[in-house]
Image (cartoon, rainbow, N blue to C red; front, side):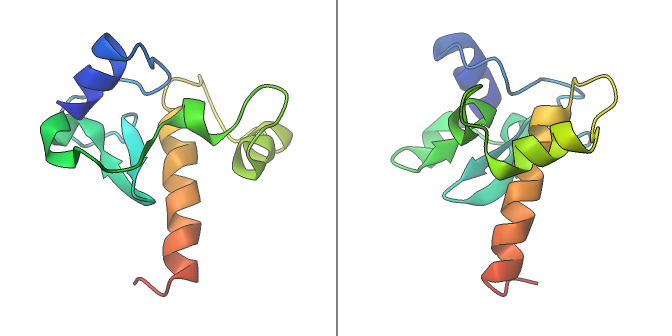
Length: 101
């Protein structure tokens, strides 16, 4: 899966494997700016696409505004699925801006 390729081959471990059935959202990444459950798709299907994980949104010294908002407003519980929630939130705002229902 795309999730396994990100974690095992590229060592981008911020994206989490939760249910492995697309139900929990812990594996949410951005593919060409749209949210996608990485556990439900194959990496080869997205060859040439722009894939953004939580690691690509910001850095500890330069947080993405959504990352900063999650920290400021305690927008997480245990933190396991926070990366998926943040990626999904970023995509939802972009979808609204683009007029996607």
